[in-house]
Image (cartoon, rainbow, N blue to C red; front, side, top):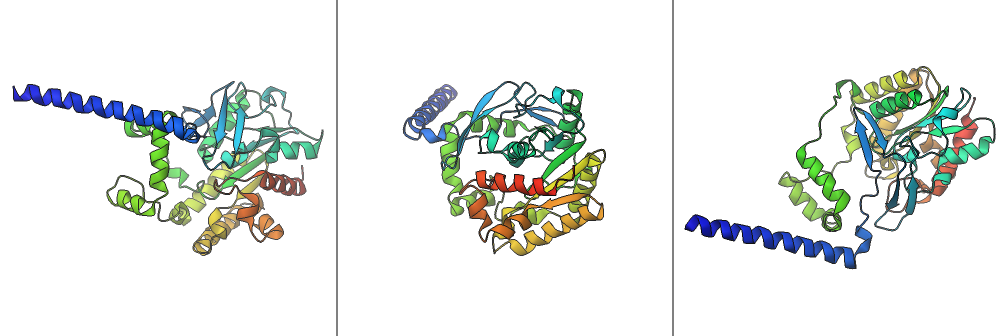
Length: 330
C-alpha cells in the first residue's frame, strides 16, 4: 500500500515538474523571444574528424546581445561558399579554419575570403571550407574531403585561432560523445528556457563559482590559453607543417583577445610569440594579425571585434583581407 502511494506521488511529482517546465518554456518563448535562437552555431554533421554543416541548408546566426543577425546558406557540400569545388583550378586558393574563417556574425560577402576575392578580381578564385568548432585534425579531414569533391588548388590560407587551436595533437583520439553531452546539445539546440537559465548563470560570477566548486560546471576562471604547454605549441606547429606541406600556404594568426587584456596579456603574448617563432623555424609563411591590428588601432578589441561576441566584425574582416592581399606572393 505504501509503495503504491509512493509511486502515485512520484508520478504526480514528475508530471507536475514536466508541466511546469513546459509552461516556463512557453513563457520564455513568449516574453523573451531573443532566446529562441540561442545556439547560433552551425548545425554540424560529424564523420570521424570530418566536420561539416548540413548540405543545402539555411540557418540563422543570432547573438543574444544583438551584435548580429545573419542568415547563413550552406552549399551542397556543407560549406558556406557559393563557389563550386569542382570548378577549382591549381592557381586558385582554399581557406581552412574555424568560425573566424567561416565568418561568424557577418554576411557571406563581407568575410575576408570574399573581400579578398573581389580584390584579386580574375587572378584566382577563393574557396572557403572553414567550419566553426574545428581544430587542425578537422581541417585536415575536411581538406581531404574537399579534394575528393574536386578541389585542385595549390594555394592555401589557413587561419589559426590562438584561443583554442593549440593542442597536443599527437595525443588526440577520436572520442565518442557522452550521453550527458548529447543531452546538453539537444537542450542547447531546442530549449529557450535552457538558454535563458544558462545566460543568467553565466552572468553571475558567484553562481558560476558555486557550480564549479560542486563539479557541475567547468572552471572558467582561468582562460584556456593558460593550459597551452610547450608540447602543445610544438605539436600544433608539427601538425600545420603536415597540412601545408603540398601547398603554397599562408598561415594567418588569429590572436587571442587576451593579448589586449591587461590582466592576461603577458602570458597570452608569450604563447603568441612562441608559436609564431616555432612556425618561422619551420620556414612557414606567417601573417600575424595582432601586429596588423596594433599598427592601425589603439583599441583592437573594440574596433575589430563584436562588442559582446568574440569574432571579427565587418571592419575586422576588411582589414584581414587587405593584410592577406599585401602578403600574397601567389
